Amino acid sequence: MKKVLIVEDHPDMRELLIWQMELMGFSAIPAKHGKEGVEKAIEEKPHLILMDIMLPGMDGWEATRVLRSNPETRDIPILAATALFRESDLRTCLEVGCNDYLVKPFSFQELQGKVKEYISPNASSH
Image 1: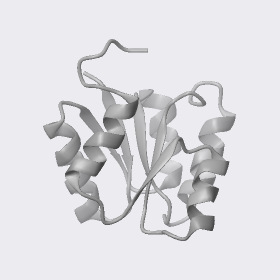
Image 2: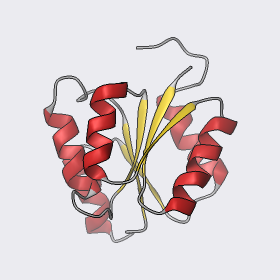
Image 3: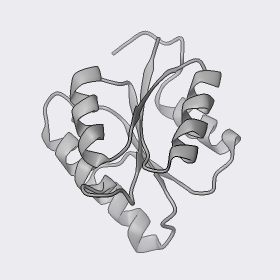
């Protein structure tokens, strides 16, 4: 089963994203902050990472930079899931290495569409 790492500090949002990933047929791996997200990405080698940007301690931008600098995680697609919506913030998401972004609040259909651009539940592992 394909794995999606969900890096999200808000428990309700994290649970909702886990539920949505499982509905789509993925195994969801939760992380509460950027440092834990980096550790779990290295350990679990997920097929996709949903990265909140505003996180305690290491924010999503810094976590993405760390993941992109590591040969083991540099090619994992990263979708920023953020409440930041200014053009400069969204540009920064892409500049630090996110493949794309979703602006909160987003619908299940938007999430599903973005996720399916990068992985599908039944496709073979990379």
